[in-house]
Image (cartoon, rainbow, N blue to C red):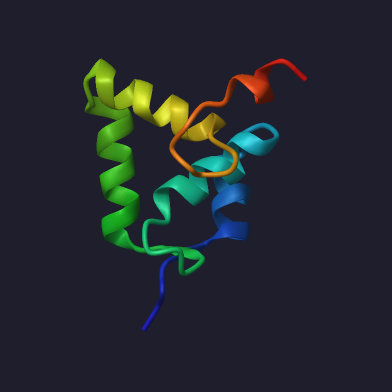
Length: 79
């Protein structure tokens, strides 16, 4: 039984620039097992393609929340 798409395969086929591909993979991998199963992958695509602006804003925030704590810290932006 296949686990899904691993990080290397995802990055190869999405060809997203820099750290964006890594961050997007991490956001989509909800169970943090290192693979995107069908549910994780399809859910992410639906949110990206047909989500409202609030969902898309949350995604953009998650892309830049490098420590994954759900917060934006002023100190980080002024270094």
